[in-house]
Image 1 (tube, rainbow, N blue to C red):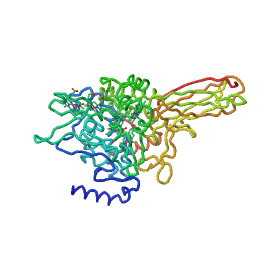
Image 2: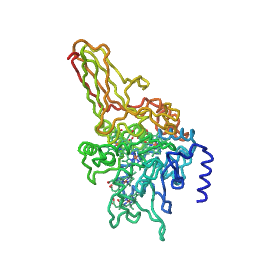
Image 3: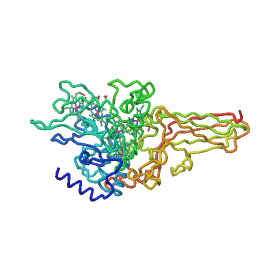
Image 4: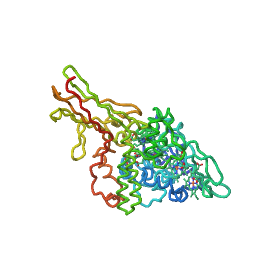
Length: 482
Ligand code: HEC
Ligand code: HEC
Ligand code: HEC
Ligand code: HEC
Ligand code: HEC
């Protein structure tokens, strides 16, 4: 306790007002010793176990988790680039916030001292591994400064000390039975693992000290129709594509045997990079594994939305085209999470009967930059000075938030330049997606820590044009006059 007090004084002294008290968000720093991460750790002689060890008895879960975004959460070069920038801008203490979610075990044990991968144990490198989720013994969602789940507000208890020495305890969905865990670990039935609250602690990312919700996937879900119908995160992200479609369309929950440890979402770029790295390292098995996950995430994205094109007629014929973008299968807003970085936009081309373009929007140039006035469905972050900002330690509000709620829609109207007097007008509309603006991706990847050489690991010399997924493509034709 004495060293803890010294440490607190030191951090406060070093950061000045950066982590000072607030009239709105009260922080109990004794309750949250790893602040700005809100994680708690019941320390005992029972240590964290790397996933390879769990995999010896649970090969199916291990294979499914390997190459998942959770497995890549700490290796992720986009993450490491942003972490490096965060530490330079704010100081080392902000990295506790990031690592509390991207590598919880490496953070609480104090093993991770700086951005990068060098010299770290397999446990720290394993990111969101088996022994993070299955050591979660509770959450502190109502005690947090925002009184909402945020910044890793969970309690880790990998085991406990007994008079015969430390024992490992793994929390999971099964009712207790003889022989569960063999002689390696005890089992503890946990209803938390059958709830979205298990995911909430990490899928609510708040500004490290202003407690502004930068990413609010859990609350978007909670305040939407899927929570009402009891379709959980697990029901779409811990299942194969067919089962996900069924959960989203019929609100029928998967059977016990249908769950898999894929944690598959939309980040096909990360799988793409991981596949390059596996090939470079000569690991064909891993490359094939990650390739499947890449395909699964593209399939999820393509299933998430739908487009409807309708004509709007005025006195003198066809005046505007209305495009309705529906979020048909994402359990939260579309897009979600890093909404001020992800890009989902409409590209449209309208042609008259002779093939002349009479309306166009949302085109990319050869360098991957989007044209002005493109209709994007994301958000713009804003700093304390009310100016545009991207970095999570700067953004404390949104000046624009145009994501689409679950089962909801947004309408976009496109006016026609010189609408034709006769013949048909043909419209092609595409809903397109990429992980980030080209410039933002280049900046983050240019800032990876020195021990992560992109050419050595991924075989890339410069950042290529980011791959784009066409989520939906629709065409329609309408008469120029009614
Ligand atoms: C509360 C948990 C949490 C905290 C704290 C957190 N993150 Fe994350 N981070 C996530 C989740 C969840 C995602 C995935 C969201 C998505 O895919 O859209 C993510 C995604 C990212 C990405 C995008 C990665 C990619 O491949 O596109 C970056 C970059 C990132 N985080 C950096 C940081 C940095 C830097 C910090 C600290 C300043 C931080 N994160 C703090 C949970 C967290
Ligand atoms: C992000 C959190 C998370 C991670 C990481 C994770 N699990 Fe799980 N695990 C769950 C959840 C949630 C369930 C319950 C799903 C269900 O209803 O079957 C579960 C269920 C289980 C079960 C019970 C049997 C079953 O499949 O339902 C075992 C065993 C298990 N996990 C082992 C592992 C192993 C081994 C790893 C690492 C390779 C791992 N888990 C990683 C969340 C996680
Ligand atoms: C020596 C073998 C062995 C090792 C190593 C092992 N387990 Fe298990 N575990 C079992 C057995 C056997 C069961 C019973 C259920 C089953 O067979 O899936 C079990 C059950 C579980 C359950 C379900 C518990 C419940 O109440 O729902 C979880 C979760 C779990 N293990 C996680 C882990 C994690 C995480 C690790 C690594 C830290 C791990 N196991 C390492 C043998 C092992
Ligand atoms: C210990 C923190 C933690 C917990 C608990 C957690 N996640 Fe995550 N999750 C992350 C981080 C961090 C990332 C992003 C890693 C990155 O992009 O670098 C992520 C990424 C994901 C992604 C991939 C997103 C994409 O862009 O493809 C999905 C899906 C996901 N999590 C689902 C879940 C579900 C479902 C649960 C609960 C069963 C859960 N997570 C629990 C930290 C966590
Ligand atoms: C009804 C199915 C469904 C449910 C329920 C659901 N999701 Fe998703 N999720 C999707 C689909 C589809 C996508 C891909 C489209 C998108 O990015 O929104 C997605 C994407 C994601 C992403 C990736 C975002 C990115 O930028 O790459 C994360 C992270 C995520 N979900 C986490 C969660 C969490 C956490 C929950 C529970 C609170 C949850 N999801 C509930 C269907 C679902």
